[in-house]
Length: 173
Image (cartoon, rainbow, N blue to C red; front, side):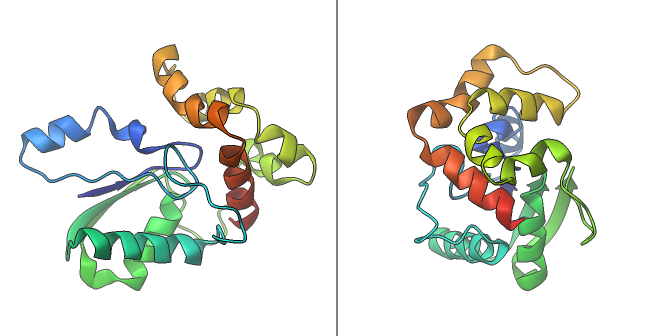
């Protein structure tokens, strides 16, 4: 089973689900998307941050780990990239679960995310580690514990490349 996280998130978001699935004998893989979490954050000259670039990266990853057919779970606005992958490579998908992911082409980004792509304002906003708190908690119905927010914030505190990756992705959604 491949679990794909949403925008501003990382594979850590699956931390409570993975052990339960593994206990049932399910092989679970939860990668960080390129530019998110603790994955590489190439510059936009090296990675386009477009849906097609993410689909290709996901396909390359699936090929590298040599799984032929698998259940796919997608979440959030980056989940739409997982859905596009499933449409492009239906022979690889055993079944699919869609969690809080827009499925229509006319779906609009919420203003809280869209403003992060604005000229100048976006460059400033996406460098703010507290943005992680507000966006993640704003997209759910519960409070995220500080110890968990520390993990989500860590890539933003370590390097400005996390914010730049986020900016480029939002501008290409």
